[in-house]
Image 1 (cartoon, rainbow, N blue to C red):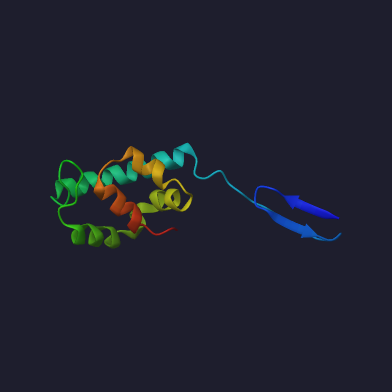
Image 2: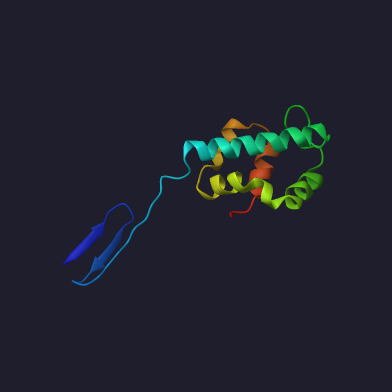
Length: 109
């Protein structure tokens, strides 16, 4: 007897095999909104500190990297959203080069 899970192209052969497939649809809307809020708050702070221009461009990339690395616990929702595959959704809501830089720097929790 063969069992097929067509979405993942997994094949299981035999009578006494067990398979568990757990797939999530990615982050929920609320999780993406929390990630967007975190990122917007951080970009606003960077803008106030002169590290980001009004158009969202980075004026001092090294200082932005240092600011992200200095606050790893600050980006929990953003890290979960990026790890869950919602990076594009977050970046579509927060425009500017700094948003892409910060999203690339966060580490999954």
